[in-house]
Length: 268
Image (cartoon, rainbow, N blue to C red; front, side, top):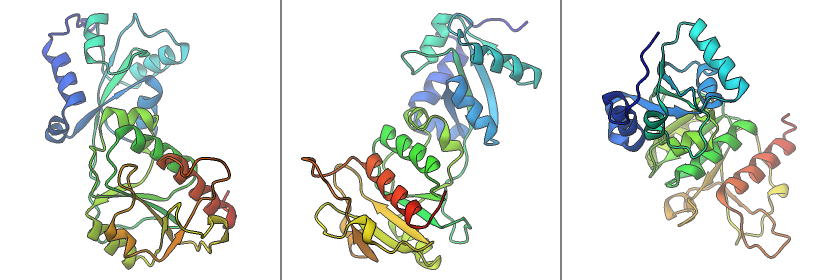
């Protein structure tokens, strides 16, 4: 039986903390921390490489989590038990289910020759909040966005808060990252019609012609869409506001745009 690591000062626990907190460490090791049995399971389903699995018996109370640990052990994953002090040191969730893993990261580089399904593409320009990015990736996966392009992102894609907010679905969504110019050139070479959204434009989303091959470009919540993209859009559109609100948050806006695209193209 594998010996339980009890101390939060154990070198392996310290390494987990560094991976959790440091983008540089994640890049050096090509690895990230995923917490929660359901999120770890999503990474496995998506074919990602698990390097290490840790668990804390005192915290693993849900029947499904126990079942998954038993299943992973049968599939010859190496499970390392942690005492509660060690696990809480490594954990980044307030109410953890007692399971976390170290997973191999993957390249997000946008190669000019990269091929993807491209009925519906989402561009996030200078996205900076990990929780927002994760939530948008979850929404994108649910609504059939074929590809998410990160244009000059300001956040580390493998930040634990991105993973948590996406419910592990960052492993499922096709994502590539590049400069604004690289993203624009890729979309131009793939004949995408580029839409931007603004509350100041009188072009309701339900009156647009969304062909299969549409990209929605979204600015960050702090600055909105910058001059680079404003000058290069094919079309503007707006999400009608029927109440007192003048706009929606980024994730809600993505949900509205993707849903309208799906409706108008009978995607279901």
